[in-house]
Image (cartoon, rainbow, N blue to C red):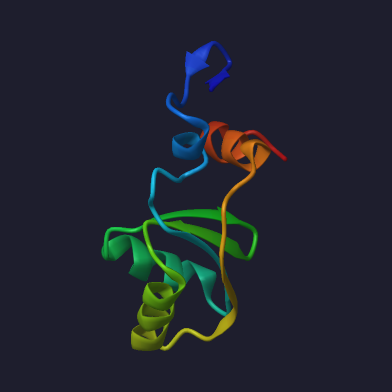
Length: 96
C-alpha cells in the first residue's frame, strides 16, 4: 500500500487487513479512550474510528475481559476483518 509516495504497508491482503491468522474485533465502549489505553497496555493494537475501536491481536473474549477488569461498559463487540479501504485510511491517516 502506497500513500503520498511512501510505502505504508506491504504483504498479502490478509496481512494488510490485519490478518495473518491474528484475531481482530470491533468494539464500541462507553469510554473508548480508557479502553484503548488498557488494551494497548496489554500489547494489543487499537485503531479508532470515532466511537468504534478496531482491536488487532485480541479476541472478543480477551477484549471483554479487559473491559471488565477496567470497568468499562461494552456497548457492542464482534469479530471483524477490515476492508481494504478502512485499512488504507487507518494506515495513512487520510479522512474517510
